Length: 182
Image 1 (spheres, rainbow, N blue to C red):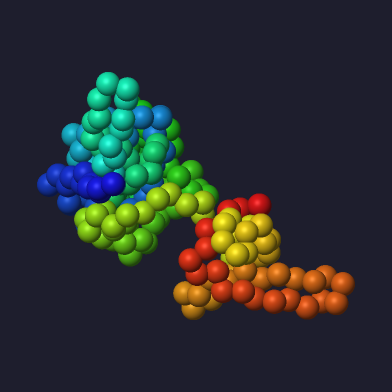
Image 2 (image 1 turned 120 degrees about the vertical axis):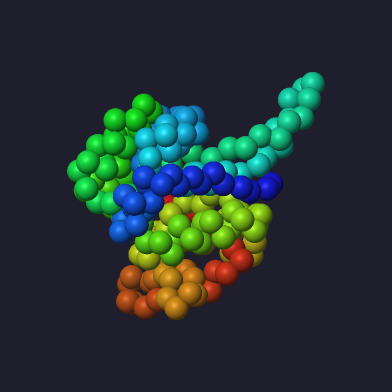
């Protein structure tokens, strides 16, 4: 699997987004490229992380580029009603992603991290988003099937197993284990 990304800034977008922030927009399924191109034409800076995969059919093999996050494109723009309206008027755009109708800004560091992973062709796969406190189960290995509460502290991930009757808990380091949300 190889990675790449499509990012484009127009001169208008540079003016518009110099004081702006990154936002995720949700698109219709398989419309990510069309949306990114249309937004670039409208002067909006976009970021579409792509992954190269080899698809095999019975008669051939072909390398295809697919979005790393299906149905999402990232846009960098000022937090103005005009800028958001320009994005929402584009064909294929469903909505800004976040707790507010205008979307939730994404920290530059998070976007830069994705850009770095994509640029360095590091192997990665989509993983369910985990919040500290979620109930999870270990998949595979010596601890297969073990359930507990996910905890992340100082970059160390752990599984907390609690015994309610005696009000005691054990924390187990889960580095290297695959986990799933229960």
